[in-house]
Image 1 (cartoon, rainbow, N blue to C red):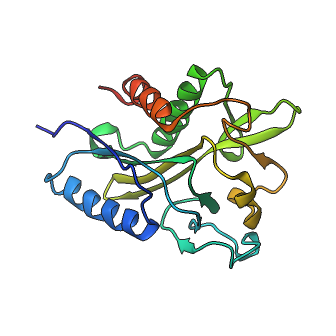
Image 2 (image 1 turned 120 degrees about the vertical axis):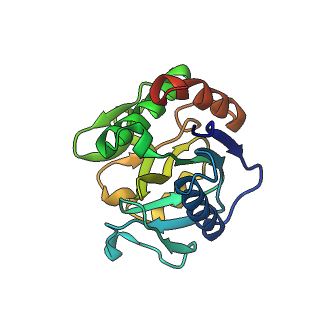
Amino acid sequence: MSLPLQWKISADPVSYPDAVSYMEQRVADIYAGKAAELVWLLQHPPLYTAGTSAKKSDLLTPDRFPVYASGRGGQYTYHGPGQRVVYVMLDLTQRGRDVRQYVINLEQWIIDTLAVFKVSAERRAGRVGVWVIRQDGHEAKIAALGVRLRKWISFHGICINVNPDLDHYQGIVPCGIAEYGVTSLADLGLTVTMAELDIVLRRKWAGIFGA
C-alpha cells in the first residue's frame, strides 16, 4: 500500500542547489518505497536556471543573478521572490506512465487555479507554459513548467507569477520565446497572497490528480 501524498510549504527562500539536492533524495526515497509522493511549495532567491534545451544566446546578462544548469526540460527561466514555485514529486508508475498527460495535468492545474481568481489562462500550441491576454491585448506568460523524470518519479514542476519583479526577466529570453512578454497576477491588477494561492492549488489538486 502506497503512502499518502504529502504537502510541504517552505516559508523562507530556498537556495536552488539545496532544493535540487532535496528533490533528488526524495525521488530516490519514493522509488525505494521509503517516502510518500510530495508537493513542495516554495520561493527561491533571484536566479536563472538553464533547462536541457537552453541556448547560451538566450542568457542576455549572465552576471545579473546566479545561473544554474538544471536537468529539467525547457530553456532559461527566472525564479525569485513573489513567484510560487511548486516542485511535484509523483510516482508515475502508479499514474499511467504517460508523460504527455502528466504535463497536460500540470497545465490544467494552473489553469483551474487561476480561474478562481478570475484569470482566463490558456495553453498555446507550440509554446511551453500557461498564457493570458493582458489588458493591452498582448499575450504574456504567467506560469512556466519544467519536468524531469527519474525511474518514472517526477520532479521539478511549475511556477506561477504572483508579484515578482518582472524586470528580472530582462536578463534572459524566457523559455526561448522573445516575441511575447511575461506577466503576473499583480501585473494584471490582482492582489493575491501566496497563502491564498496555496489554498486554491491544494483545493484544485484532487480534481486533476486524484485524492
